Image (cartoon, rainbow, N blue to C red; front, side, top):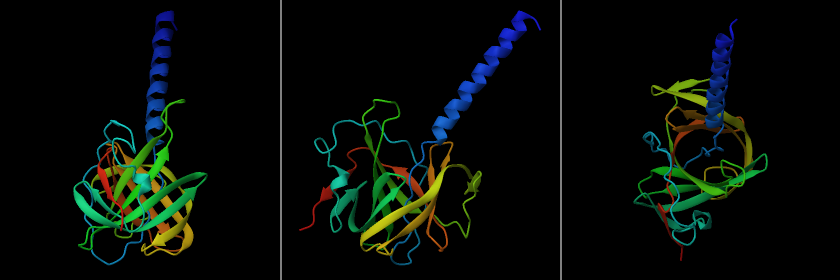
Length: 222
């Protein structure tokens, strides 16, 4: 092998390693589960393809309301839709904690709003809030696989799965306490898909739509 050929092969190996590292870093940006139970039997329409949240402009709690202050019974404006917070789930898995709120727009259309404080992508970066709006999607008995799955013509790759402990408050159609299995997936366009279930129950699924900072207005209950 000539020195020129060896150098070309070496550069090719480095390029492949960098591309593989970038792909793994992307797929690891999963999230924790959206809870499953919702009151009523009204069908929910799937959310459109989620777009990445816009960069933060301003300071939470100063320039726009802090969604972590939402309480059961509050009324909030979420993306121009006025909804009431019927209940909340407080979840934890492997040291990570987050909250999910069940929203009702008054027309028996229910969505879940998940709020989690996440660390920055790089060491030393400040933490940020991840706010996701979840909309149920029918999966017709589909079971989340440990490999790639296809739903509505979109390929989703597995990013995380496990079990979370939860405590409920208000109206959630969930027990007061329990365990929730989850499996999270991400598409190449950044769209999120989550399967979850109470242990021993059928799987439910939902798409996630990331919300940009300042998209929620909170009206505290009287």
